[in-house]
Length: 182
Image 1: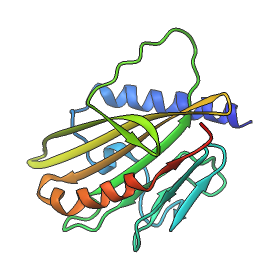
Image 2: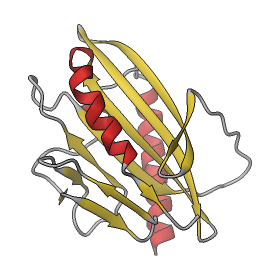
Image 3: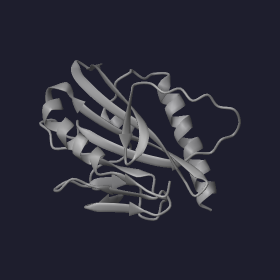
Image 4: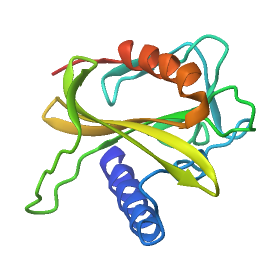
């Protein structure tokens, strides 16, 4: 059942990303990367554990991660950071089961880093959206366990003027992610 749901969500997400890609810019806003909104879906506080993905992650004190409805499968959450502009800064954490449907080329961009004990790739981009400069920091990783591979992304989206305030929160979040069962 988990595999069927994961395949469905992966295909649905791929369709969303493909549709968005035709009108997308290299830099994104929180509303472009996540459908989550504060007060809707499953709230996450403190340490979040998921046995299917063999992960543990800690939501920073005083903040809430917002995920899909409690009855939906876990695929991550979005943390909205305090800002001068309502919901303009966020950290998105997403993870899903890799389903390979044939030959695929793996192209990695950015700087090689480590997250939760596994290799990852980090890319920082900046650009303007509707006259506001935004910075996106994206970390992509793959986590092998139990003869499965999970792929994930952790992304900081923030107005560039707030980078000095929000990047330390992002770095602290990244540093405490634990991926086990390799």
